[in-house]
Amino acid sequence: MLYVSQLEGQRVWDSWGNIIGRCKDVLTNYVEKPFPHLLALVLKDGDREDRFIPAHQITSLFPSIILNVPKEQIKPYQPTGQELWLADQMLDHQIVDIEGRRVVRVNDVQLAHVQEKYRLTGVDVSGRGLLRRLGVEPIADKFGKFINHPLSKTVIPWQDIAYLQEGDPIQLGISREKISKLPPVDIATILNGLNRNTGQAILAEMDNETLADTLEESPSSTQIAILSHLDSERAADILEEMDPDEAADLLADLPDETTYKLLELMEDEEAEEMRSLLDFPDNSAGGIMTTEFAWIPPDLTSREALSFLRSSKDALEDEQMYYIYVIDDDWKLHGVITLRDLVMAAPDSKLDEILDPDPISVSPLTSQEDVAYLVAKYDLLAVPVIDTDRDEMLGVVTVDDAVDAVLPTAWKKRLPRFF
Image 1 (cartoon, rainbow, N blue to C red):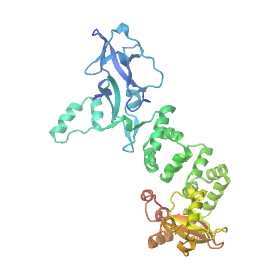
Image 2: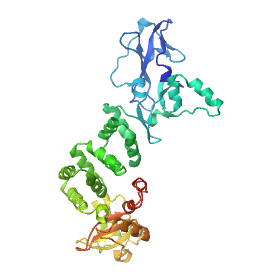
Image 3: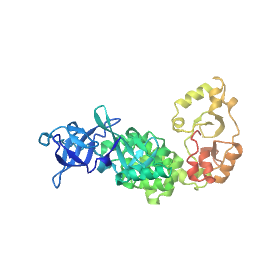
Image 4: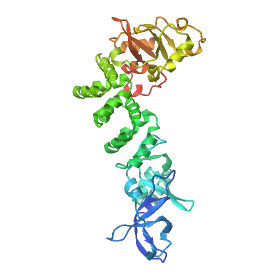
């Protein structure tokens, strides 16, 4: 394999054996997949302007850089502005290892001769790559073997990389597409590892739904930092995409003036929902509950109930559907059915035959610690929150939000999302 550090500063010879300059950089077409081919060498010749040697006029790059034409017959490559400069734009820059789901620093860039073309095959993120650039790799390699601790090499294939070039909408779009396919918790970790400017550039390219899911997996400090760098209208749109309890928690952490402004920009229904959640203490059932839950009216058969759920907007928004709540027109809770029991019931079974008519429930002012105790004691995945004064169901507290009182937030974020 060949590395960019081995080309930098090397003499470039024409076909007659004349030295025409030194290699300054290597250009590739980074949009091409999976392995971009070499487009040109950037040649430095004294104090003259950079010259660009097209790839088809290069015979070899190693052990010497030799062209296949005399100096006089070089037809300069004309840059389009869409090229990737491997030394200038890659070395010491941050990239995202999609497979390893982490942010890493590029210590060297790997090339290979494949199908009659030199191609960009990967990036070296190991210490060996840095030693190679410093020119001490052979010495360090011998020393490592002498102490029975050989140097390791970690090369990430180019196809597993999201390259982050600030100010380049094409490449940011490609990288955003790769990163957006990762689980939100991994995206959150990646954003935490990026420098401020690069992180903001990636955020600007993400769609609202992906960014909302990412915020839900991020610590409060990261949520606030991200939201504060977005324009108010987009911040409001993202809050609408988040789970109500998560959005309310985030709004509660913002300055009152900012919270008021964002609520004004949100849709009336979502804004009212947020205000109702913000009315309750942070550490109460009402403060940590979500208003998104699946429900069905009474007096249905199991077949009719399943049909109702398929067309229900509330059921569609319940991403952790496990319990189905039977509620009448006045939002009075008649009972709870597990999704499994509903699916397994005979099609003509009445709901009264399969529901639990007396489920464990809490009031909106029940403390978070007490909710966590009930969840643990009765092995529950969610607890309904009932306004006892009006006998009305307000929402549910899911187990992850309940146990946040007794588990560190970072641990709670890693609980499986099957509820």
